[in-house]
Image 1: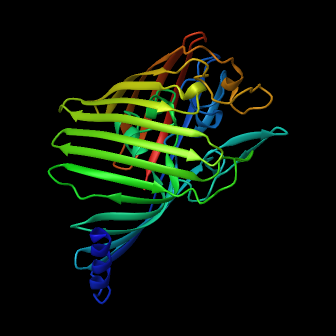
Image 2: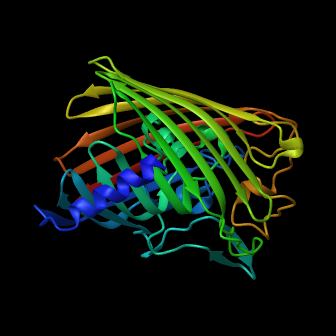
Length: 376
């Protein structure tokens, strides 16, 4: 109660003060890659076909989630600052909105549940002493942890390890969310996210409904070390469970930067059995860029298809060709990724990646990819 009253008092004190400064910024990324995945049965990144392509085909796609956004802030005085973020994700190869939440096939056509500001959209109020409160659609603490501890930064890459974070779960953002970010004290800070379910209807063919969500995160940053612990518990109104406990860390040794991630997840598997993922990776400066390398491991429970969670899928009913393969008895996957990023300028870079993954009981899959990325 004292905490809430402190925020109200700060707002009242700031109201009569003239704003010291304000800004609105347009930002974005256009990142397009060309990739080819061979005809193996192991899903190279636990991605859908629009992300890295179908087996045995060349594909042009967005590599690091191309985006266009607006962000701004206003100094309200007395140590208080207001802000906002609107982040739109799109596919530059086709000019369409990036899919979100669910994908379905109906008469051979895909249907997406995707909002325009489908990454994040929130308004915030921050205090130097009390921290920051954000309201709107926001990234979960487990997603942020995965983003920072994956050497590829959760890119859609044949070499990337995004599918080997968060215990194999893919809840990256929460609708209807209130997020509190604490101030950093001696390098330690915390996040608390609560997403309201709002009584949404059961899931439809076009995607998942809103569901209640709880996310918690702890972060310690001191010098070259960043260590993170995060938990997320999502329960949709159709009773689909998605729960993750994750640990991530990075350490800058000077000549290389190391990455590590270990996570445990539950995803409405038979008996709600647990699955685990881990990865180790590195960035190594080389010439006018850096090498990125990593190994990831995914251990699913028995009765769970590690390539897709789509039950009873066939090649004719799903856009994900891996979903049609049979459910296995807990066979694990191990992936190796290697890439190089060549920096042309502070805003433009070239990338080249190779990756290979093998799921026990499936044939090995490998792929190559090259891309151009421009940041503004």
